[in-house]
Length: 85
Image (cartoon, rainbow, N blue to C red; front, side):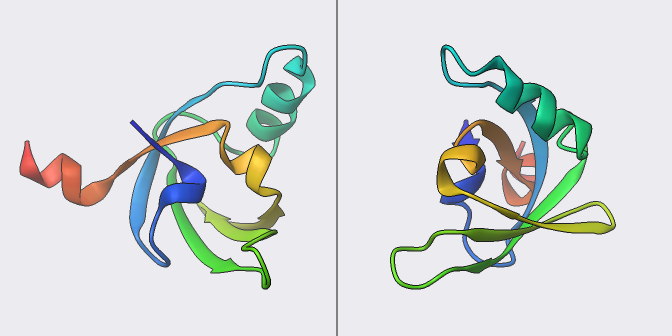
């Protein structure tokens, strides 16, 4: 499974799961609350410079800035993998 921060810029994907780091269950709740739910379309729009943090992410009709650590909690499936099956 691929994590959101690993996508190429503008690569289409679907959210598969949100898994918070141990001890930070509020991260999962926050990400789900703003729309990172299984099956939702997602796209990495931009990376901050230097270091690629924060990330600009488009989920459904909304755009958010996420820290790389938050994006690492979001498991996605690139759409090109869906078509290959």
